[in-house]
Image 1: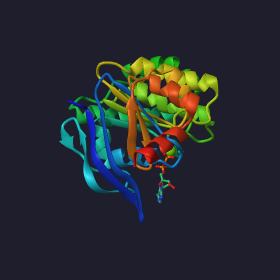
Image 2: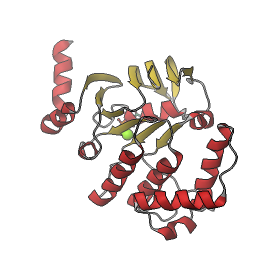
Image 3: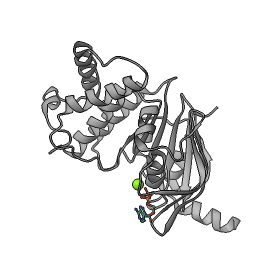
Image 4: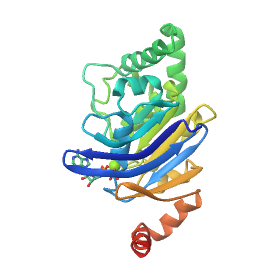
Length: 254
Ligand SMILES: Nc1ncnc2c1ncn2[C@@H]1O[C@H](COP(=O)(O)OP(=O)(O)O)[C@@H](O)[C@H]1O
Ligand SMILES: [Mg+2]
């Protein structure tokens, strides 16, 4: 059974219908890439999966761990083990990195019926995660995302991913605007946590990150639907040919 299953999803934002009958399944252990030209609806899908209030599901279902979460609130989805790294991370004034990470970790532990993490254990986990993601130590005392560079924000997100180990990680354009070092950090983080207990959905317009994190499944989105699926070889094909041929193929088939 797929861990995350999107069935015939229609989503609109205001008057605009963006997703139009989208189907997608991601299982544990699998790394999926969702690719597609700008404006095809990739971020809308990420937002709909997380329950962003600006997006209305008018038809179809989102199933996570066998449960219909189409109408669940965002907090509940996150507590169930869905994780989204945002394309444009926001600053949280007045909350330090350490405090934020501890709060998030404890919220997840509470959901699983566990005690809050002991301070010593927390420090050790954060230190290990920071090492893995090359986040400098002095970050822990800073306010979340305030004055962080693009690369630093991404490192923070990956740090959170590594600590949290969600069951389903969705990364929306995590590679956009990153230099190669920051991109490696992101890729190393994803590769370090991906495994038998996690599914990963990497959403990207570019191929760059997919050379560092090997997807097992590749989906191509166009005008609100998945129009092509395949294995990692599809990444190379898109790199060589761009997206134009997909539109042509669709038109020829219509
Ligand atoms: N909140 C919104 N209100 C109206 N239109 C939106 C909104 N969000 C996205 N769109 C439109 O929906 C389309 C898909 O956007 P998006 O999901 O961001 O695509 P992608 O991430 O693939 O670039 C675009 O035409 C975009 O302008
Ligand atoms: Mg986007």
